[in-house]
Image (cartoon, rainbow, N blue to C red; front, side, top):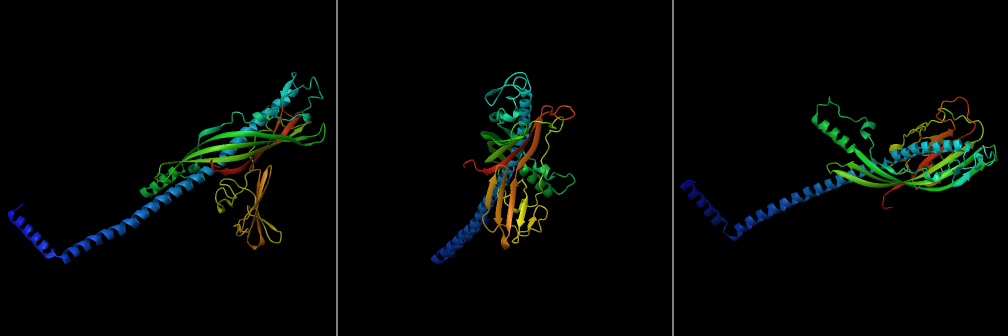
Length: 383
């Protein structure tokens, strides 16, 4: 540094010290310093609070989204149970018919049964339960791993190459990434009971009912918004009912007559009016009716507008049976909202000796059945 500049700097510093080297001068400096500290603190506090609140909001939103995706696993798991059981039930029934007409005694539910060739009366299927091993119907159905629900495909969400705006591309990519998911689940089942509910004698149809309880333990993995992977547990309980009827005479079950057919879907205009898991499940639809004060009824599935305000004004009364659950909720104006969850996932089937085989005409005997898998409850693994 130039000697003259050094001398000038020292001279200015001496003047500054001389000017403020008194109580009032140092007080002014101290006030300026503390004012700087206070204003800095005043800025830092709201900024830090905003960041903290933003972090909390993102965390809560990620958890909420993860829970919604987790709830939707109920439907594919239930569908898997229905699809697998249909094949197993049909196979057991066909095998039972074949064994009864064979030449060797067979075991059905722990009892040795003679064939029709050795004991025409004692071997009658009207006197036996259709399933010879109901406790083994779920054998090997232990669950699945690395399953996924393709929401991007369901909502037709994909990255269009024609989009030039980088911000729009980035937004779509983030949404698609948050829709990605995977889940694992294990199944545990207990056979509850079997019973004959109608039988009017030899030569008449016999109706029997079976009941199982199934528990699914689910772990779902979703992508959070800038927070990495989120793992969430869920426990789903199902009631599984089989209503089975034996027909001893001509039965049209040969060929493709007993091939599995998809159940009829019910329209669902009310899905978005309730929180997931509340009255209407995230992917399930049920008949919904409003009963007016004068007793007239309106089907909300057919005309959502005519039903008006259907937000319940009080608690709902829930009643249930083997294949249904009904919720009655009070509405304004003396009206009542009825949600009838009938056979949440029910499918009709049949079985005879020539089911799946090429044959014309009826078989001499056969079974008709209705399989119903109903979601009983969805909750935390800590319940």
